[in-house]
Amino acid sequence: MSGKCTENVLRMQMKMLREVQKGIGECCVDENGDKLKSEPTKDSIIRVCRNHATMKHFKEESFEQLREKLDIEWPKKDGPLEYKKLFEEDSEGNQSAFVECLRDLNLEDREEYFEQLEQAICEADEIDEGESDGLVNVMELQAAVRKIDPHKEENDVDAFIKLGLMMEKRDSDGEVVSRQLIRPSAELPHESVEF
Image (cartoon, rainbow, N blue to C red; front, side):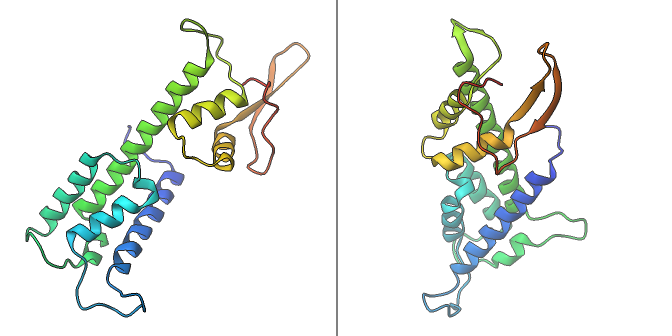
């Protein structure tokens, strides 16, 4: 990675951090919404992270890294943590080692997901023993997404494909005259159309 993130990735990470912080905060209240006397423990913070949608695919080593960062922030073995301090920024805009680790793991997981997707698309495109024409259709894209993410809902698969689909308009000679992204509200092209 070049060290640069798109604005969408940064927004997604900020949303993830807000949701994790909110989830940790919910560990501090009872069923009636009354504040408990203690702050969350390291175990409850890791449990919130494990249950977050963007972290369901994390490997066990990722949660061990998060635990290590918590141990650095709070060397005590047990006891409550002032979790809000984990999410505070210093005067230079840096956050805690725990939050930076969360962000890094999220980017690594995202990168690995897209590498797996690219591999699955390339495999779907193979015509004959490793040869490819470089074109795939909607059915092949859907199969590739389902291969790496079998629990993704059908509507989510289609929405995901639309995010990355670029449609080309060609003239009568077959030359590309324009390219544009499919609008999220548009229907997917017919399954025989190749990209």
